[in-house]
Image (cartoon, rainbow, N blue to C red; front, side, top):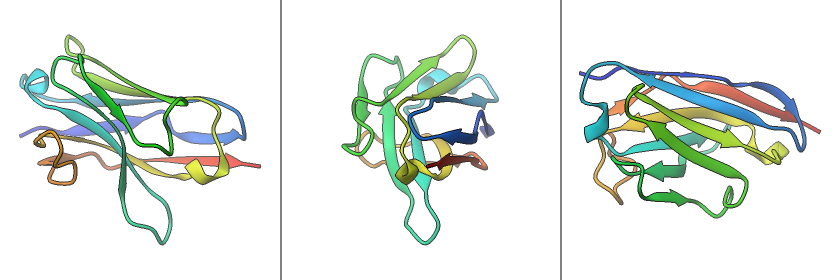
Length: 121
């Protein structure tokens, strides 16, 4: 069993930055691919970034490419999402997830509770 706890969300102005963190419990963190997802009001949850077990491979969706950076520290059981040049359309609840097959993003076995990011214009 893995518990994921996100932090770092908040209110930021357009063009600002935030760094989200996701702390994982247990000693199996390094065996999981990790991903960041978001869900805006009235919209479906969408994946925004993913990182492989070792951190050697990352993937970004077009909506955040060039602005967001995903990273992980397996020694600290943590995954991060650095978000720069934030836009109002980035406003959403952000979730981290673990234990999915690379490419099957939404079949994650573990999800965090989410952290709200609000970008004001």
